[in-house]
Length: 599
Image 1 (cartoon, rainbow, N blue to C red):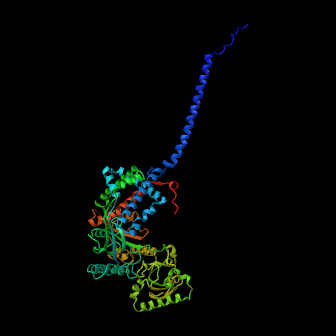
Image 2: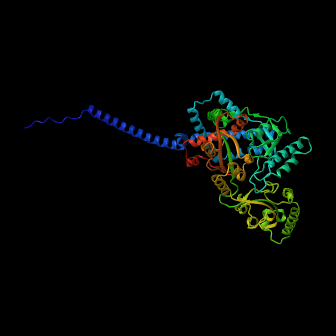
């Protein structure tokens, strides 16, 4: 027999150990499960937070700009806009500015408060700041706490404002020539000087001279007339004239006559001077409405931009640099699309039924109002047949001339226009809505000069001074290129084709420096061989061909530096942005932008 000992019964102690082990295992398992659940929940919460807040909505050279950064900047920008509007309101309430001036000065601010605009502007600011910060880091440019404080003071200040009035005299161009002749330029200067002298002597009032001068300005001659209440930086005139305007000691003083880059001779006066206003509570107000820290970050970025621009200025404004002496041929893009065909130069007066061209199409032909309009047109035609020089005077009489564009064209003088623009839709700003007038002036055998009244059913009877025809802009620049390629001198091609104000001086642009012009034009100039021609380049305003006559390293003179200060920073910044690798999540920006308030 095999002896087997009886099985041992578990002791109470062993049973207790097993229970403890089970409990420990259970607790550990539960704990791990809890930790895992919390981790999963935390991951979900973090993912949601990151999607809503930390996820990038843009990046500059691989450095991200988060959604929260855009939200924070938009909050600061909104606070600044509201405080600026408040400051202008104080000036209005203290009778420093009028209610009309207040509306003009704050209208863009109010528009920029819209969330869509606000958030897009915030992202644009952050993108530019990131680009500048990276450039500053690479070039050892920094700002101090004092620089930031100075920037905050600048932000808190509304600079001096002046109500500016400008009179301009434009050299007359006799169609079909593309530009005025030298004697016409001299006449324009003499006329401007005579206007100025008559006002200084008290022989004529400003308003009377301004009305006469405006009648002789062509369509698109801007920066003339009542320019309103503006700051120095907001006044878009030639630097020399801006300096003269802000050097005037008191209201109604007059500047000298200045020849501007567009060829127009201008002088100015001021009717109001508003002293600078400093908002002592600016920083606290912005901090309370948004975040003091976020605002200081913005002020630091603005100060850094000023430091970078100062560095750029030392290189491309006041320092020695490679400069090129350049001539140009410029042909305006006009008002049509390339290939639209010939352009016509006309002056027009419209005689509408009931003096209302906008409703002429609703008035039945044969209505007495049409008969009256025809009688007025016939009378004007009879006058002009005897004395065509009266056209400007008759066109400037808005009690008789019913042209909807009369306020923009006091002398009835339209720019060169293609057939398509005469016919186009006036409600969309793409044309005049005419049919019979373009048929008459572009028809074969049409004679130049004063034309008998033309019935335009949608507008009224039109009296036209038909002054000339010329090829379309793209054809004219092609003709200029052919002339140069077949041996014509640059000077002769300038005289025949160029429409730039400098055409009377062989297209001389003087010495050109880097960043003085947009990148396409700059590249064309600086890539051309010295002594040779550039490629043809176009921008929104027209077509260019350049000739580089010399190259030297030089420091611009004082007058050049003043001009360069106004153009170099923006051109340089544009070039910097174009060289950066910038990514934007447009859908992500839209997703975080609050809805615009219901009107």
